[in-house]
Amino acid sequence: MFRTAAALLGGLLLLGAPASGQAGSPAAPPNFVVLLIDDAAFMDLGVYGGEARTPNIDALAAQGSLFTRYYTSPLCSPSRAMLLTGMDNHLTGVSTIPEVLPKQHEGKPGYTMHFEPGVATLAERLKPLGYRTLMTGKWHLGSGPGDLPGAHGFDRSFALDASGADNWEDKSYMPYYEDAPWYEDDAPASLPDDFYSSKFIVDQMMTYLDEDVPDAPFFAYLAFQAVHIPVQAPAEFTAHYDGVYDAGWDAVRLARWERAQALGFIPQGAALAPISSPLRPWASLSQEDQRLHAARMEVYAGMIEAMDFQIGRLIEHLKAEGLYDNTVFVVTSDNGPEPTRGDTDPRLEFWMDMNGYHLGADGVGEKGSWVFIGPEWAMAAASPHDKFKFLGSEGGVRVPFIMAGAGLAAGVRIDGRAHVADIAPTLLALAGAPADLEGARAMTGRSLLPLVRGEADAVYAPDEAIVIEVSGNAAVVKGDFKLTRNQKPHGDGIWRLHDLSKDPGEVRDISEALPDKRAELLSEYAAYSARVGVLEVPEGYDSMAEVTRHSLSRQRKQYAPFLIGAVLLLVALVGGGILLWRRRSRRV
Image 1 (spheres, helix red, strand yellow):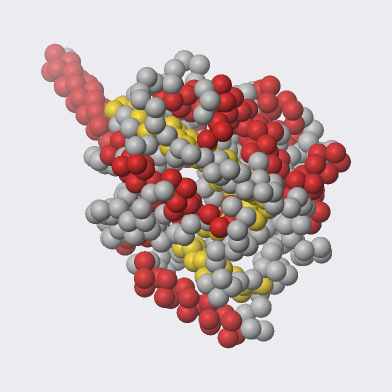
Image 2: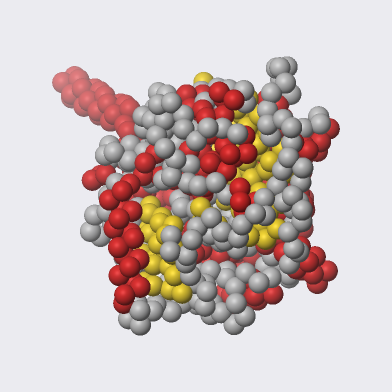
């Protein structure tokens, strides 16, 4: 069920290769292509040891730098805000996602759920240098007037203003959204009949790249829906993984942990966090349920491969147009794997029935199929780390990150820490952009150029902390130590201390053994919180409960006219019936 020995050996040779000499610096400003995956785990890509075939992404890694200690946020919008601005999420206005925002935080500074005044995107910073700025795919960074890509520096865009949508059709994927809000250049737009998300996102970007405009460098931001729920993929890609996941999530989690040791991502013998209640052991499922869950994970791998295939088309297009050699590529994920199930809430299942979705094995991953992998597969995908999306554990915030292209060293593995807010200042440094932009607030990230040019092993000193906070889920990473706090429903709000050099799976809490270190990292968090304006979540906060509250509120607004109309119709029918009955009674 795993990669062949030859493929694994190839990965070992790549990851163990010494840094090559620096490529010659390009004379012209480099182009930038940012490829953002949605909800991919640290080891999901082939070059990181995953089961999915990703030859095009693997080739980029071979030509550039592969990061092993890159941190993002545990949720999509804050990560995207930091990637595009180089600023901490709380300073952008997008501290979390609207779906989980508690009432107490609504409208507060940093929690307005859109870019606030003085926040400048990469597109806005690159345009004064003559860059064309292009965007296709998921946006999810504000829905009001002036919140879409065109208002934030993008010349052309075809954007989904939602957390996700169907990958085959122009429709919503969850009750929170009435429809799938796609916009081209900030105006409502429809999708082609042959739509499949990964293909369309690449097709549309190639269309923009081919437009007849004067020669200029470009910034292309492609935000894929893969592998966000609903997990969907063309059958020809899913078929490549027939039987790969039949042994179940316990076996896959163990296998990824073993490969992580072989690839040097974690120390030999480092503990693996157990899959514990309420998550289910694979053996507790019926054979029928095992087949269905294995099939869902096959679609997951197929969706990753389908995305990689489309990325390959984009790369070939750039080569054919003579643009590839002067292009810098970024490949990463917004957060760890998605744990949400679609089969535990009768209200969601009713909504699926009403909107043409099914959860069964027939045509799994194809049109009408609403596939999820759930918390057990998410735990397996996150291996060798613990937990998944939403949480501050390594499985939620430690994801793949690759940089490759013009002027960068090749064949490099980087173990130094990096953060999602570092991407923007790195690309701006490559473009020769000034550190400041008139009217814009300062970035908080730092340039990774010393790393990707092979000039340094780290840009964060051991005594410097990287701090992450989204909806009460938080992490403080300082040197080898990490302080983690996870909220409901998968956590208990307690801070736990871990030594990642020995315990990357965050299995052993060493707070009692090292109380001074715990206090030191808590102090780092307090200083960060005051500096960026963190609002602590209210007592008893539960992100899934907030999703339900927001969804029900939006549904009441969406369906209120229909309900009022139905009530009025019922009143009219009843009233008419009574009137008719009275008339007949008088005649008698």
